[in-house]
Amino acid sequence: MIDETKDERLSYEQARAELASVVERLEAGGTTLEESLALWERGEKLARVCQAWLDGARARLDAARQDPTDS
Image (cartoon, rainbow, N blue to C red; front, side):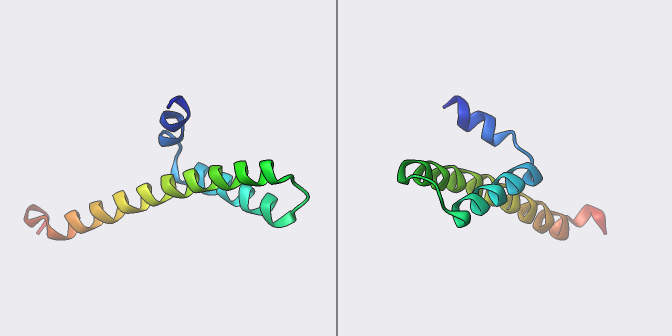
């Protein structure tokens, strides 16, 4: 649970950079099955963090477009 809280505090850019690193390591191969599974799980968590940031940005954009006080 502590790691999830830590992950939620990552910026989009931090999560994306770490995710790219995880993907590179998986694509390079040479890891054990256990290591590969751990990397995959980490990648899934990071992808969820990135998606949450993107969803939040989309919601903010949609709200800004619909805000009648900005006219």
